[in-house]
Length: 176
Length: 423
Image 1: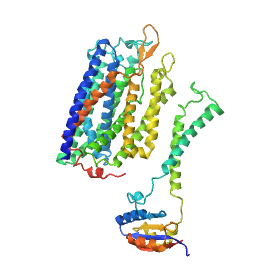
Image 2: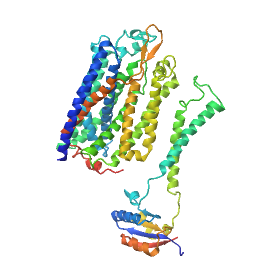
Image 3: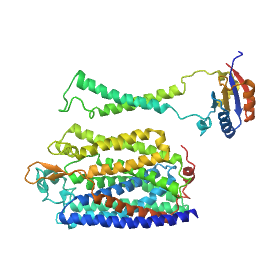
Image 4: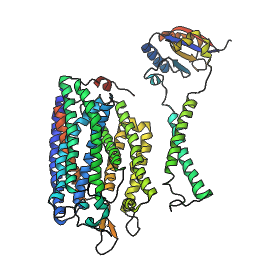
């Protein structure tokens, strides 16, 4: 149990929590996160997080659905089993449009859901942070910043001092 | 103090707009009169398209104001006031609409513009209007007295609701009376229905009945979606101008622009959905009384593709696909010049959409049975003067209203939430 997962610090109220996050960001740490039981407005910016990548998954899902519908109708109505319906052509981009459109929406929704899981690294049933009793209080009223030991700037003593300096209390190392 | 500077500025702009409006309408009405004298309908159609364009913006804003009231939307409170200034132009539009009503009343051929108004008008391959069974069936609705009554009722609804909503909103600035808010919500919940009927009748009477054989239950909804798109694009342009030059500096936030842009994206999809559904149902049913409307927007009588085919393609790609793909992008919704650019783009294609809906028509070729000519897509000089002239009056009305009231509804119960709004 000599390996440490990281170091956690608690903060007394939301403003100090928020500004501490900005300071951690400005100090150049990369592998760290903030934990609270409620959303804090503007926290992604305070953490220096870029915009979500989920829209990319949505877009790819939508495009896939659109062309899947197009190819499916072409295959069924014009290639595999050509049928004359209402004297209209075997294939045209007009009449399969509802199918293309529905599949666009369906696969865009799947893309969004899947993209959310992928970008959030879900499902994740366990984290070494659960070893800390103080961290478990995050589901109540504790506000915690955790810096992980895999961060290139991580140093057991310097990081502890840094967290103290920015107003952290109850600082402790968490074992893996 | 700042507000006073703004009032002088807007009064200057209003005076310029009034002069431009007077010149523009004078030139256009001269063209209108020429067309009237020689029974040439194109300058009159210019007038109708320009009325349709400015009316669609105002109707869209009136709808948005009422929707915001009904849903108790707090974030657009500062934007709502700008719309309230714009909808002051409804009475002017009514006066500018009157020349069109003069045609059925005073012209030798009452059916010069709306051809069903004269039973003697000839139809390609159908004899005359009076002998046309489709007209006979529709005559209880499509007759001149009822048409004029509807036109007056439509404007009465728009002018009445906009005047009352403006009065209550401006009164809140002075009295702080919260009852104004409650009553605005009550009026809006009824007003949305009245305006929906009004806008539907307006689009059916003034645009759809130009080719009265055709019918589509989507038409009113098409006009509604077009109105909202035009209104949202105009709101962005107006608010950004006011934020850079005038009194919304520091008040209009990124989050306000972002939300209006999101609505622009939603209504881009809605417009495409409605327009395509209309086409799709007519394509599937394949009934001649309906398909001809799309045929003349694609081909001439001899089967050659005509100018409207290009316009149709322009609408599919320019009015739907390009704005849709660009508006999906977060940057388009927050970077000011991109948002304004896409708004101008949408307004230009909205004008093209109106051309596409109003201008094409079957023209009779003498001594040629069922053959017909299609009125092709053209820009006429009177189009520009009509757009500028009627627009001048609308901007004059807006500037005049801006001098009467506070720049933002300072004592509205929701003003703080709108000022501090974040995504």
